Picture 1 (cartoon, rainbow, N blue to C red):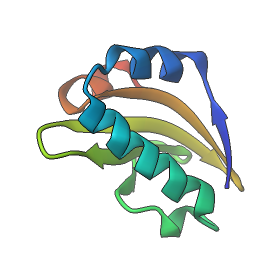
Picture 2 (cartoon, helix red, strand yellow):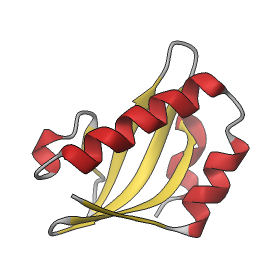
Picture 3 (cartoon, rainbow, N blue to C red):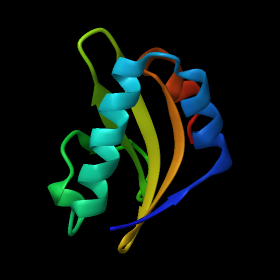
Picture 4 (tube, rainbow, N blue to C red):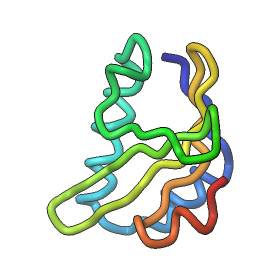
Length: 92
């Protein structure tokens, strides 16, 4: 899949200071790049009330984050990367 990274996603990643969660994020982004379509991405769930907005679960041993993403065709926009408790207030 083609990945487009928004500025808000990059700012959120910079705030995540844990090497553990950054490593988990790198693994998830690699999985997204290799996926032929969204059915090959683990932990992706469509948000209620939306047709293109998804959350993607990124977990490490001590942290649980979510990627807020918009999927249209073969392109996925990575919009937000926030802790589980905060992401639903900030995305979409």
